Amino acid sequence: MSRSTTTPTNFIRQIVEEDLVNRKYNLIRTRFPPEPNGYLHIGHAKSICLNFGIAEDYQGQCNLRFDDTNPIKENIEFIDSIKRDVQWLGFQWYGNVRYASDFFEEQHNYAIELIKKGLAYVDELSPDLIRQYRGTLRLAGTNSPYRSRGVEENLRLFSDMRKGKFPEGAACLRAKIDMSSSFMVLRDPVLYRIKFVEHHQTGYQWCIYPMYDFAHCISDAIEGITHSLCTLEFQDNRRLYNWVLDNISISTRPKQYEFSRLNIEYTVMSKRQLQLLVTQNLVDGWDDPRMPTISGMRRRGYTPESIREFCRRIGVTKQDNLVEMEALESCVREHLNEHALRAMAVLRPILIHITNLPKDYEEIIYMQYHPNKPSMGIREVPFTNEIYIDKSDFLENKIKNYKRLILGEEVRLRNAYIIKAEKLEKDNEGNIICLYCSCDLKTLNKKPHDGRTVKGVIHWVSAKYSLPAEFRLYEKLFICSNPLKDENLCMSFNPNSLVIQEGFVELSLKTAQVSLSYQFEREGYFCLDSIYSMSNKLVFNRTISLRNRWLGDKYANNA
Ligand code: ATP
Ligand code: MG
Image (cartoon, rainbow, N blue to C red; front, side, top):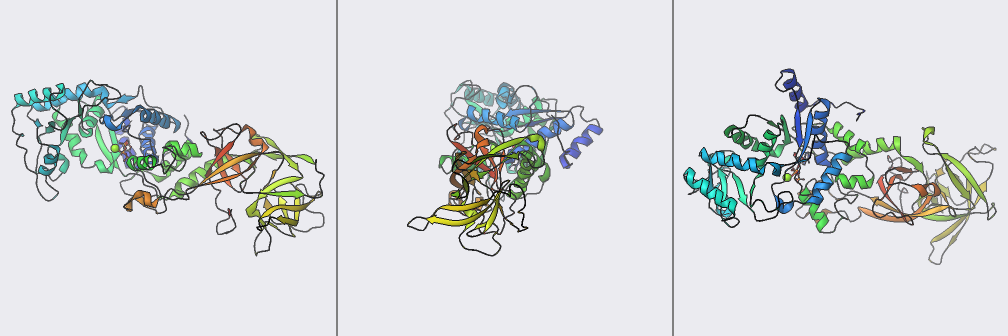
């Protein structure tokens, strides 16, 4: 796959380059290790672009390894979605998909090795007591009374754990490190716990499951990972990562490096929080177009190219940061501006009768699919004596600087004629039902002969030859920039994050495809919704509005 832009360097790439120059490694191996307990979000995309990007750029290999050590929260749906998302982003893992559970047997054997070395013991303190004994940041922990068990007893008890002789929570295997370490992770961390649950890969083969910290470093080493890249919250865990690898007989030696997580304003970036939005039915599933998930963004019409470009621009550092949503949006806009097909859609229709055209008037107007790319082709747009324009494009009374249709004045219909609003019809409540306009038939894509100037241009569709469509307009998911600061996440959910409009699209959209993006003139970039759109009912998601030329224009997008 060719990448259009080169990735700027960062401290991790510099380490990789040095390791290659110094011949520390001949082959760079990275991995992306998601827990299959939710759908991937844009934060994961940062990690994916980093791991797969390094493998690609340095002719290395990147594995996809599911960190499946907690079967209670995991399932196949998540696994499938993660594979799909990684591939959609444009990456392919090396060889087969891997699972930490592929190595359960090896991990178990290394645990036995630690027991034999007197470096691990079976603890029978309850989980609560283990927590209490661990101490605090200021207070050293206390040794468990079971800490000084002999090797033989530990081997027997660990074997009993595996055989299912203990109930859940009655025993666990702990590393014997240092209960007074200033690193909490080194205060005899739990390595194995008992869980009588079915595992999506190993069925009922195991009732003891390794903890992440134990399984992860061993999986990395077995796979020959050279650079194990993770986010900053694992900084302290690096000590444990190294302790395990120092104390088991494994020859490969991966090194862990940490970088800062991606956070974006007005959204959340944690599977747990996203899951909450799903279970509370605040959104329409993990792939709701408002979600910062890869699947939500795909459904909304974001392109893999724009997400990769965003990841390239934000870079990789150790500084915590909160990125503005606009940074992602401008990548999406730039890509869609190049590739989206142009079309016209009227989101808030108001009917116009053109009074000086016969009832059966029909004319085909030819328009380019892209103003700067004739190669994208030409579409046919029927023009008839009844058309729809957008409600926000008409005003009864003149207002300064308003450049659209005003009663008694003229405006140009995009790629068509100049019309003049002559009269309007209202219902009993004063709502406008329709407008009567005249049309200057000498102005098809031409200036008027008499030199008069008509400034505004508005979009339109034929009333007879257009297709009804639903438009789903999205706004920020939360009303505050850092929603996690709120005690109750749901309280800051934006109730206006989805607005639905019923209108019309031009006839060329009859063949609209889910995989394509469309720029509806002046309204933004749209795509067909992959779930709600049917052949008899088109449903479009607004991917993003246009760069807001109308910013500060209070008439824009008013219903
Ligand atoms: P979450 O809190 O959303 O569940 P996680 O870190 O538990 O995230 P994992 O499935 O364990 O999710 O993550 C897989 C990889 O993606 C890890 O290496 C993790 O560090 C990285 N990752 C997760 N979230 C982010 C983020 N916001 N920015 C960058 N990398 C991330
Ligand atoms: Mg996690």
